[in-house]
Length: 151
Ligand SMILES: [Zn+2]
Image 1 (cartoon, protein in one colour):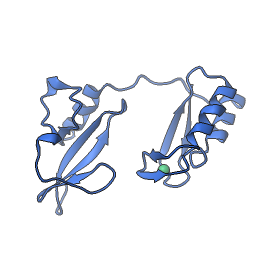
Image 2 (tube, helix red, strand yellow; image 1 turned 30 degrees about the vertical axis):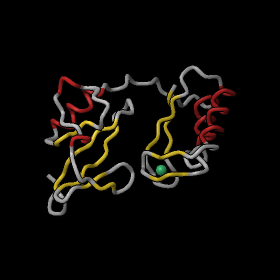
Image 3 (tube, protein in one colour; image 1 turned 90 degrees about the horizontal axis):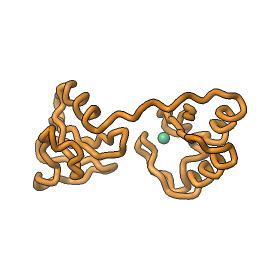
Image 4 (cartoon, rainbow, N blue to C red; image 1 turned 90 degrees about the vertical axis):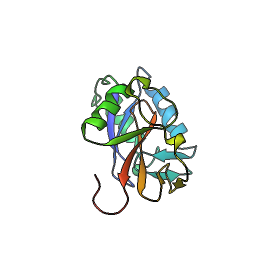
């Protein structure tokens, strides 16, 4: 089952999926969330983990004791994810794993002279390459003009 929460630092919506775990097993997972450095999808790194910031214990209470959980939705495939971004008129680059060869995406690894600008984002003289991770965790990039209006 899935339970919604929010990050208390950046406010981003979080979905915690505990599958078929028992409450005790879920609490053990939450404890691990707090004992390792982790990166929030809201783009901040926490050396002491994210369980507390994500209110994991409260989420587990709501899931197991109050019955507020939801069935997990099917996870979007990389092809569906990329096709949706391309349909928005974005220029998508493959991050190197080439999980959707049928779409013929250019690879970011073929580009020269990119500067890392933090959180996996890059820039060239003329463009920025903004990281977009798919729901399956594959890294892609959207290329946009630097300065001016984003295309
Ligand atoms: Zn956050």
